[in-house]
Length: 384
Image 1 (tube, helix red, strand yellow):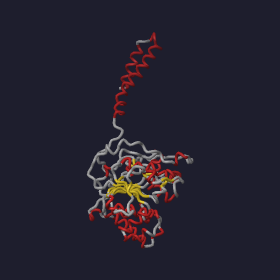
Image 2 (tube, one colour):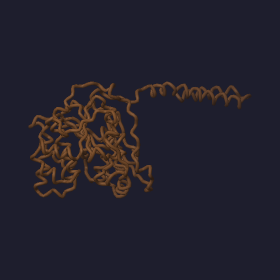
Image 3 (cartoon, rainbow, N blue to C red):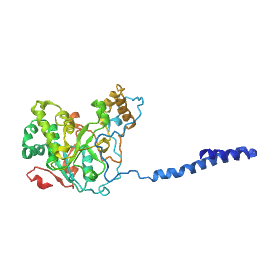
Image 4 (cartoon, rainbow, N blue to C red):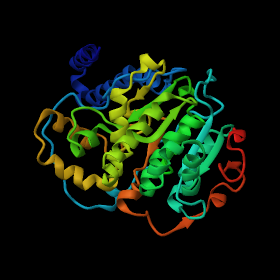
């Protein structure tokens, strides 16, 4: 169609010799007008399309789908400058989904949110808006807050077979163990306090149990893995799912075999969960496990570790390494999709120390919301 426009203009120029300058001006304006007319409809159609498009129940990945990675392996270079903006977490994009617009499905996972911190009286202030986001997006859910005392009491009262381990390991190990035990005991969704909700989880509750992989970039560059790896910062299941007892049994076995000095990642954390996941016989026990790809909960990397990631890219020339490094270059603010439900801000307080000195209290974070505090003299089963 553009060739036709050029032909018309040339024909008109041949009949305008006495007023050549004026004709050229008219012809130029005609080209601009016709070009605009040709492009205008498609532009309108593009902007008229919805910004997000979600199925009522998205299809999760039973195995890892790395949709975000570039298919081309291009040479890249990084400017290794320490800039404050590169070490802070970008704000996630606003979600068009809210609790009232989320489709109602038959729930297998109960609508209970669990979060945990050392004490309800000294919570890092940076966590406050992220913690509130979960209540804002899940106003009808039950919110339960666990502290170190409640964590240990859970094992003393309901899981005495693991109490010796729970009372001997460090607090971060105990926090790991507690999330598995509370999901077995009560079910629901456990989420770390440095996780921010961007949309309701109701459309994921038809699963028996779900896990999620952390950024592929972390796996390839930091762990030198060849595939995605699981993270345990957000977990969910129905009550009584056998997977959690298998995880706790594996922790007990490692502890008794002399693993008490292992780091949390290996003894009680995501690497332990990963190992159990690969051993878990879902068909034999009649219970399924769903693994969501990183876009659901981990669209961003740990920005405080960006310098290390860029440094590692200098020495990665293999296809997998270049693919991960290309992702870093192409997605400096993370990779969000319509299937993103939350974002992990990777504060890693157990490995970096407390994040700043400013603290607040649970009651200040939630001045009006109903917050359940389990194992404080009440019948914990009666809370739910």
